[in-house]
Length: 312
Image (tube, rainbow, N blue to C red; front, side, top):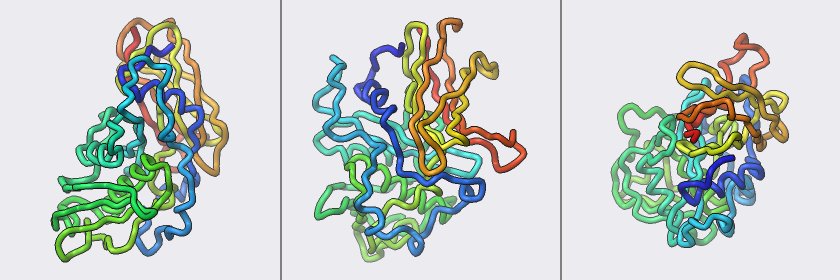
């Protein structure tokens, strides 16, 4: 079994994994290559503001069975960027932050690119965000400076929109509401990365922005004791099949598959218990993938997500 977590977030994330259910439209071979929609084609606020992000932990959840849990902290989802065969997409990590202003604390981690998983990163350059608050039915982001009105060198139009969605998905997940995000700028030019900020931003259609498989447990760097590894996450994979493997370097030591609760119309929870009694203590990598029934003959290949864990 997995050991008690080093962070309050870990045990809670493990309990939440079985209840995760993203409101996500599955990417087919063609849909996977779709660009992040621009402002003209992004969903209107009326289409999304009432959607409940049921994949996120509620703010009342707390790891009450963990004696090390800090009652002054809360667990929130952050969305970072990882690579997929279809290009960069968003992947989620659960983190524990001080609960006095979790919106701002989560934003600070996002801006810093403070990821647990080294495969993830942030698309945000050094932009100053002075405050984030929920007010009047929106999430208000204050950017006091007038820098980065245009895209920085090397940022494509698609990356610019994905950076905005990285912030939108994170703030909506922390707030537990699909409410619009309003960005207020200093200066006289109200663009950010070349994108007009005078209108609110809503969560773009997920089919272009989220990776199709996400590992929740084991968490990156998590410690496992005993003979079993409890693995979980969400995926949208062919016939709900989520292949997994445990590797040491390039050697595949164990492999199998989990069965998600569904497929095709959104990301569904999956979980599996792996017998690791044959493995020596050490550091291993757990990788989950979407199933590829064509064996690589069609499409760009499977999406995957992986986490290193320590077996004691």
